[in-house]
Every structure is written in structure tokens, then in C-alpha cells.
Amino acid sequence: MASALIFGAGGQDGFYLAELCRARGITAVGVSRSPGDWLQGNVADYGVVESLVRKHRPATIFQLAAHSTTRHEALFDNHAAIATGTVNVLEAARLHAPEARIFLPGSGVMFRNEGRPISERDVFEASSPYALARIHAVHAARYYRRLGLRVFVGHLFHHESPLRQPAHVSRMIADAARNAAAGDTAPIEIGDISVEKEWTFAGDVAAGMFTLIEQDKVFEAVIGSGRAYSIRQWLDACFGLVGRDWRECVRLRDDYVPEYSRLVSDPSTMQSLGWAPRVGFEELAAMMMKRAV
Image (tube, rainbow, N blue to C red; front, side, top):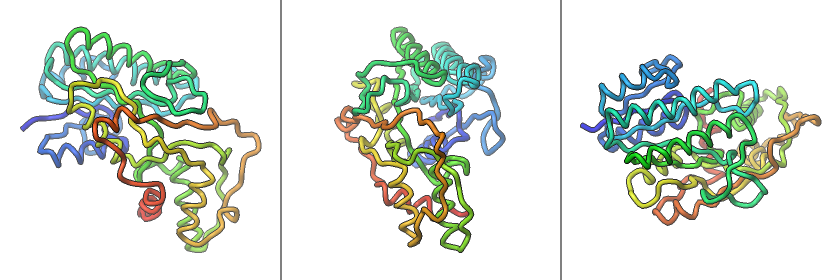
């Protein structure tokens, strides 16, 4: 049975990828620094990565490990997990699994953002340590592609699932709406609700990753819905499902400065490969509202 190594298995993307692997008869071998139902290991440690690749000789490798923050204080953590981790994976694959298909995530925030839809053809801009590390990883992918590896980059935009951590704004809002329905109107504090971004289901994004690596014509593509919604619309959707007014439970921070006002993709390349998200905005809100507390 073919195997897939999933570095960064502890996040929502790793969870849905593992599910898709099982559905395809692929043995998913998850790796994460955090404890859980996977192997514990740090992708920034080349010895660990090489040992795993040499042992499993995977048909597929997903390098999802990252610190999902753009703060400057995370400079070295981002570099270690994303940039160094990617080079470790690619070099280990070159030596021990040269036939493997390798997926690396890019990000919408690594592009110059002027508010219009962003495609894989747009210009990179190192606007944060996180973006810098992602740009480094993409160039590493291009280099190793020259050495004969099949390395695919899917630039991911904002995506959600019931597996989001409680501190994330989408989960905070869904939890607050569910609590309000039960009579608990304890307020949450959030920033600029006019910010627009994509709200794609993480399971659909994981399916897009497989769509990309299962063909050999396109090696870099944006994986997104191409549809932007504001945080206000997310509030309306979640609280609307329980018939409550979000203004009863939300305090807005006047001093909050968002990183962008609008971040949206141009997924036309992925659409040409036959992929599109199946779960819509309202359905995603309902999924997150049903999440067990």
C-alpha cells in the first residue's frame, strides 16, 4: 500500500488530508511537534526528516508545518518550520524518495495585495516574516524541480473548519453565537469587521491539494474559492442561524489595524483542472455552529 508523509499533521489541513488518504487507500503517516495521534518530530531537524523519508519511502509528501502568524517575533520559528523544513523535506526526498510527489503550501499573504483577485502569476512581496519564509520555500521548490523532483505548490487563501482553535476569530464568533442561543451573551472582542477574505472549507482545500499533485501539467496554482466575504457577513451568518443579534455579544476594537482590507484569490488555474470548492459560505457557518463545545 502506498504511503503519504504529512508534516504538520496536527492542523486542520493535516486532518482532512489524512481522511482523503484513507479514502484513497493510502497509508497516512502524520508528523507533528505537538502530541497527538501521529509521530512526534520537528521538520526543522534534518536528521528526523531524513530518517522518516528513508524509512517510509512515501509516494506522496505534504510539508504543511508552519507557525500561522505574521508577527515579527515569530521570525525564527517561521523560518525553521517553513523555510528550513521545506529544504529538509526536499533534500531527503531527493536522496531517498525521488519519485515522490511533494506538496508545499504557499499563501495569499506572500503576494503583493492591491485588493484585486490574486493568482499564482502575481508578484511576491515579503511583507512579513511569514511571507518571507513562504517565498523562500517556493524558490526552494523551483530549484529542486530543476533537479528532477515533482514539487507542487498550492497557494492557499483563508480557509476554515470546525477544527479551528478557539482563539481564531471565525471560531470565536461561531462559539459566541451558539452560547447566545443558550442564553450566555458574554461579549467577545474583535477587530475590523469590514475586512474581506475567503471562507473556504478546509476539506475542500485538502481535496484541491490532491487535484494539483495528481496531474503533471501545472506545478504552482492558487487554491481558493475566489469569493470574499467580510467578517460582518460571518457574524450575520452565525448569529442569524440562532436568531440573535451579534451586537449583543460583540465589542469592536477601535485601535485594531488589520493587515489588509481585502484578500481574495483568482483560482482559474485550479478550475481548469476540474477543482472547485463544494461547501458554500452559509453551509460552512452551519458546520462550525454544530461543532461540539
